[in-house]
Each structure stands twice: as C-alpha cells, then as structure tokens.
Image (cartoon, rainbow, N blue to C red; front, side, top):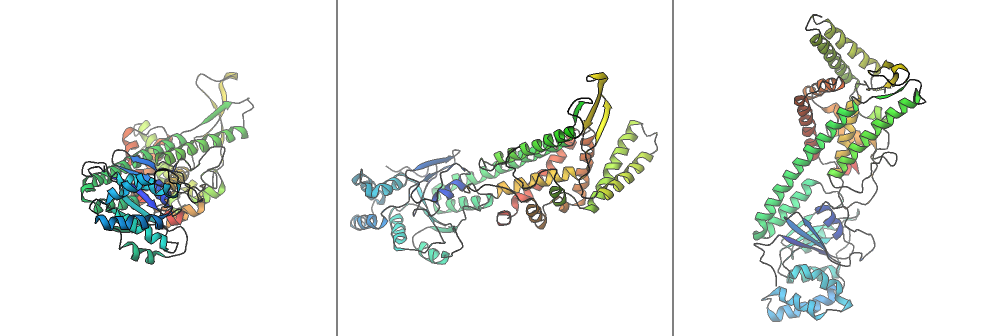
Length: 483
C-alpha cells in the first residue's frame, strides 16, 4: 500500500532510459561521488536508496528494459479500470511478472513508485527522441504520481527542443539540469521545482532548501577557518637544525619548502573533504591538485598581488613593524621607525615584485641550546609579501574548483594554475581584485601573524574577510571556465 504523502518523507524514484544519466543525477543531487556510474549500459541492476538526512530520499533505479511491451500490457488495463487506482495496476504488474527476466528492470523501478515515490525522469537531450522513450513517458503518466522530467545533455548534439515538446505533455514540470556541471544553486533550484509539483511535499522540501542553505553557510565558515589556520601556520613556520648536522644549508631549505608544501596540501585536502569530494586528489608527494608547486616560478607569476599592490603591501608591512617597535619603546622613538619601516618595506616590495625571494639561512643561538653550544641554522619564517596572497589565491581556487565540480564526475582533477587565476581574475575574485580597504586590513593582520601578535579579534576579522570572499566565489558561475 502506498504511503500517505502528507506525513511521509518526500521520496523520488530516478527513472529513465538506459545510460541517459540517472546515476549521475543522483550523485550530484545527493553530493555523493560514490554512486556507481558507468558508460556501460545497464550497470544499475537494482534500486539503490540514498537518504539526505531526514529530509528526502532518492532511489536510483535500473533503466527501462522492455517499455514498449510493458505499455502494451498496462495501457489496456488502465483503460478497463478507468485508472481508479493507477498504482494498483503496477502492483499487479510486479506480482504477475515475479521471476520473469523479461520485465525484471520494470519490476524493480516500479517498486519505489508503488510505495508512493514521486518520479524524476532523466533523458539525454543529446540523443534523439525514439518510440521507446514515448512508451516510457506514457507508462510514467499512467502511474498518476507527481512527475518531473530532467533533460541532462551528455554531448554537444542538441535535441532539447524535441524533448521539451513531448515531455510537456506527460510531466508536471520539465527542467534542464547538467549533472556534470551543476552548482549548489542549481541543486537548490531543482529542489524548489520538486516542491512545486506536489503540494503535500512543499513544507518539507521548503525546509530542506533552508537546511541546505544553513549547511552551506556552515561549510563556508569552516572553509574560512581552514584557510586562516593555513595562513597562521605558514607565515610563522621555521625549520631549525644543528649547525654542524648533515641537514644544514640547502637540505634545510628543502625541508622548509617540503613542510610548507605539505601544510598547503593538507589544507586543500580538508577543503575537498568538507565538500564531499573523495575522488579529487591533493596528496603530498603524489598527484597535486595544481599543475605547479607552491614554490615554483610559475606559481609566483600567476598568483598573488600585482607590483603596485605589493608596494602598498610593503608600506603597510613596514609601517606595522615600526608601530610594534614604537609600542615596545613606549613612543620614545617619536615615530621615526614607523616612517623608515614603511619606506623600506615599499622599496623591498618594488624591487622583488612578483619574483619569489630566495630562502635565507640564519645562524642563531637558541635558548637552552642544541648540541655544540646551541649554535643552529634556521630557515623561515618566509618574509615574502606576496606569500600569503599566493596561499590565499590557491586556497580560493581549490574551493572554486570543488564547489563547481559536480559529484557525478569521475575524471581526475588537476587545476591549471594560470587558467584558474585568469578565470578568478576575470570574475573579480582573485586577490588583485580585492578592494583597497579589505586588502589593507588583511595586510595588517598578516604583519601581526608574522610577529606572533595576532589576537582573537584579528583572527575573527581575517576569518570573516575570507568567508565573505568564499561567499562571492560560491555565487559566481565558474563551472564551464574551470572545466
């Protein structure tokens, strides 16, 4: 017996022709990249249930097997019974063909429908509409259940208008939905459409949309915190070794680079996991998400501030150092270090520009000492003014990639750094496109981080600045540009 849809969790059976993208739609809607998807026809051989919290349920069903023959059996029965109880006809069909291999797929895909599920019919708008598709549509109309048709194109061939004309005769609503490029906004729009085709489901699906929005906001906040933690660690990291150890000199520099590269990779991995993309790889020592490493010349050319902005950043950084000196001397320096620091910072930024400064070795005495009297070599923290902005750009690029990558995709991911930066630049989302006020605010916080002076207030400010930028990236349509 079918369920009372007023009280039941909204449930949908994803149905359609073999290999038209049903599983891809389920994977994208459920944000689950573990759904089995194959280019081989008929790979889905049973109904798979996917529950999204307690909000709604999707069933991924096998493709129609013998739709024309099934319609020949169901249509006369529907006419004879005048469809007094449409689902009773389908229950009888299931019982009648139990053990019948010829209609096994139909029996399986009818099961959630007779249980009260609404129907999402997926077609490939790149394929021509055939007689078998017309039979499928008529069968689904005979169920009397709420029905939404999704046109999911898988290639450049375009038969969408033909599909729209025919689908409009059989379904409550018809929507185009590219399962491989759908964004968060696209998924919400589809849920809102589903809420409109069955009045009894509207309150729960409207609540689902609100829950999803809240969940998205929470993830933006967590992502901002991941990036803040990366910046706080990377701008203060130091590698130290005994001056007479074998790890001196160039090897110590290599260890410093490896440590920061690993820290960035772990942050990118955390962002990827936060948005449910287990198949996107960002492994230290293995395949990198970006095509260029953090300390490569290509990375430093592509990402971060431009020369003019770096001069301004140098002035802020130098002034911040002077202010800290003034405070330490309780103002006895009469502000001279502030002015000198600002000028020196600006000149350094102008000379270095977008080049990556060489890592420097420092000989130092450590409190308590290491072996041999406490003399040690150290590398870091890395003082390059562009460094935090490069880290920030690459983290925002990782975020942009994963939120615009549908969970239905199964290809491997490598971000082309220069192309990513050009895309973000064109959309007004790169670090060079930040407004002067938030950029200066960030620079002041970066200067505090470098000196170990960032307090909780500054950390919250930085998190909110980054979160606002993440929200802007989230609202942009970048899927095609990042593909």
